[in-house]
Image (cartoon, helix red, strand yellow):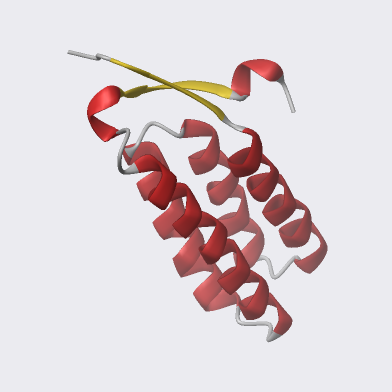
Length: 104
């Protein structure tokens, strides 16, 4: 993963919310993995769409990009690429470097 994708700047007003937000995203990845075991591509698509929106809302643009890819692969029912993208998303969440700063 490219280094510039691992550091993001988040408004310091959100600092208390981000750890729980990221924990929830990791939990959602596990839910998606369960959906994948059951070939439930419709719910994978819905959950990926949700992650895509919330990631961007908090400033995690790379998270949104990966979730968009997951959504696309779910529509094509591409299990192998879904697994790879889920691993990429988990890796990103576990390794992202967050810098909190006053944004306004």
